[in-house]
Image (tube, rainbow, N blue to C red; front, side):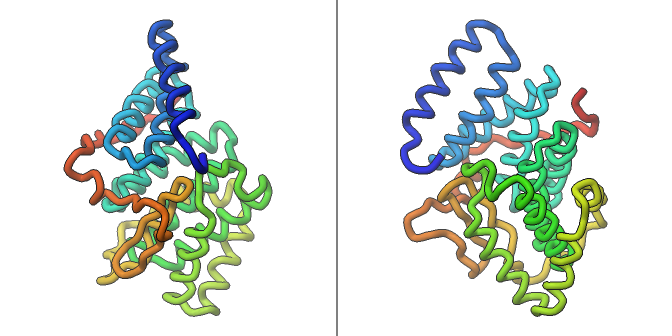
Length: 251
């Protein structure tokens, strides 16, 4: 997904038109989720959100999990200013990715939930989730999906956590996460604790990105000089609201 996105956008739009003519709902949902990912990378947040929402609706109708958790994870990314909502979306995405056995997406959901934990003032939980995520990514290659995460932004987040916890506490929590088996990590992530009041100056939440699109929180700017800032401030006046996700899982 690095570099020019015009050609993949055009190809995906052509494929979307064909699937709509065929009435293939699984194909429509799959293409929509990937097209939305391209649009998110291009900075078209409003249209990306609409396509993710449509893809998610179709995935719930058809039971196609991949387009479902891809959409959920990216909607969570866009909902990061609402940690409760982001957590709900990440948890649902994690459950679906776990059912499919998509280890890379499981790891990315763990990273997303680490960001939520940090924003809620629970840096130890965040460090554990980061540790579990990085250990899982190491088993599949870092990164398996180059477009899904920017590893540099994750390293910036880890440095922020290390600063908040201190080296000893950070290393211990991170090691606990790394020692978890994948199923233990998923169970730990899905066992959401009660929300903790965020600190006055949270330093970690908007740290996950698609390609070069990075974001920041407070004075901790994680965006590269040449990359677009991914922030709800960029689309809050135009993005359509994201409806609550049903509690039931896909079949």
